[in-house]
Length: 266
Image (cartoon, rainbow, N blue to C red; front, side):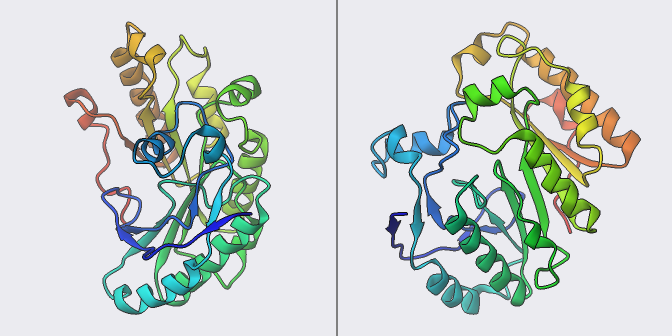
């Protein structure tokens, strides 16, 4: 695997998952075609040329060196670190990336720093080992159970069944697990039973829900706002019934009552 070097690693995050984050890989072999916002930004600012380059990830070869230096300066300020916002820490069939991610989590935990992760790959079963903090939270992205949808929009990601299987394994080991249902597709892209998807993940501690942006098909759907509001209300009812924390990431007065401001506190 090719590599790059960086001058810094940890950075202050503006998103709720962690007050700090890091991206120790550039690119993502999952090759999502929603389209991927991070890929578009990298192309826009000249970091990569195109999709073909994006799906060939590069490791940050000095990531551990940077991490050790930055932890010593910041560990008293950091509450949690999220892996990752612009890439995936457990890319499917990318062993080098998995091993580096596990080492990063270990070093953060060793310094008393909690970690959250989100992947469309497979959560490693090693995360259940005692060397990792029980305060960590491990998540998967899941927007459809349909393999044909995945083939079209998430061509390089792990099979949905394997994603769920390994997340359930970590849950059964007593670890905190969560699911991001974002970006959720409108019915003109795929007709599916939202409640059926929720039933598959009723074992998790929390669920985050968000709409699909940056796509002309979604924008053209005539009942888009009503659809997402109905989904959000279904989510709220389901989560309250099953004791699951939830958060709706959609802006608008109608959605405000569906936002649990304490969901990201640990």
